[in-house]
Each structure stands twice: as C-alpha cells, then as structure tokens.
Length: 280
Image (tube, rainbow, N blue to C red):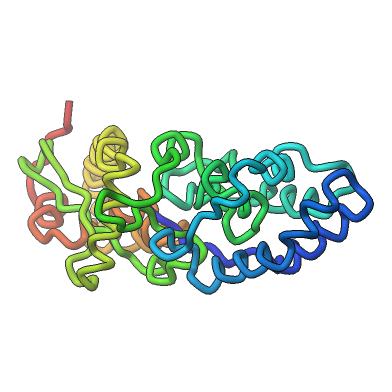
C-alpha cells in the first residue's frame, strides 16, 4: 500500500538559488537575499536527512513571513522558475497512489513536511509527491507522534518500500472471511516495522481496504469456480494472477491480495479442491 518513487530530477538546492535570483529588483529582493544562504543550507539538510521530521527542524525566524514562501507554491508566476517544475510533478502518469496503493491517478501534490509548518520547503521538489485526496485528508499536518517518531513513509527516500513491506493475514471461514488484518512484514527491522505500522494507522488503511478486500475475495471465488468448470489447474493460475499485478508495485492493493492468498495454503486448497460457496 505504498510505492517507491524516484527522486524528482530537479536539484532542490539549485532551485533556491534560482528563486532568489529571480527576485532580484523585486519587492521581496532584500528579504530573500538576506536568507538565501541559510535557506539553501536547510534544503540541502532536508535532502541529506531524507526529509525526516525527527531531525529536520522548523525555521521560527521565517514564521511571520511564511506567506512569501507559500505563495511560491500557490501562485507561481507564468514565467517563474518553479512553475514548470510544479507542472512536471503534477503531470505524472501514475495509476496508483504512492501513499496507500489504491488504484487511480493521484490528483494532488502532498507536502511531506507541511508547508504551513515548514514554508521553506513549499516548492522543494524532494518534499512534493503525488497523493490521492483521501490520503491527504487523513495525513493532515501531523509529522511525528507524541514520542517524536515520524508518522509516514517517504515515497522518495524510504528505499525499503521498493519491496513488499505489508502482509495481509486472511481470517475465516474460507467461503466468507469475516476478518483480515493489514500488518507490517514481521521480518522487517523493529524500527522500520513500527514506522510502517504508524503509516498504516495514520492513513486508516486497514479500514479503507475492507470493501476492496471483500470485492476481490468474491471475484476470486468466481475465478476459481470458472477455472474448475473448464478443467483448469487453479493452483497454477494463482501465481500468474499475482505476477500479472506486480507491475503496479509489490505493495499495491491487488498484489497484496494475491500474495496473501498464495501464502495461505489452506485457502489455496479450498479454492483448488473443495466445494465453493459464494460470499453474500
């Protein structure tokens, strides 16, 4: 339910230099020239620390001027240096939300560190990633929990999410599972496992996955029955279904579903050999 994205091909620190230069002789020239060096250093630190809110500090000195930074994002000029970058970041051809794994082109950009609290990163490419509306509403402006631990995975910097990091234990009965859980992979390091769990909880992913899981299980029962009616080996078909959906990412909703089914020998036996009853 997460997707690893490549870091945008724009130098976040160079953009600071370009923005300051663009404001030469403008009404905010003195303001931006006065903080240019520190702004660049803070952007470089963000990238070095991989956007981690546990270590990337806010900038109290610019709090009273946050609108000057946020306007760079909200109102980019027609010929501004940041406008084509923002347009390129919005023009992704993704068919899945990187933060939750649900199908559908994400239609907004998320500030991993919120622009209201971190206005200096309002147009930092490394801080901007595609996200669906539901995830953005769930994520809000929180970055760390009460213990100061970050809450959410970063689609650019958390390299481990290029592999499957979630598991989907399926409940019983087999004809109509009454429950499932969405858990971090138990083989992950403890700190990563805890982060993945916070991401799941923060975006309410288990609840959101419920209707999808039910629909897919009903569909799976029908596929199994159709295959058996045609004397096809359903055990051989299941890995093909999983492989077919891997291109959407190992943590995409559909791939997680088939991975969970294949990992449960009792479910595979039921689908391949036993009398099937359709869920209602």
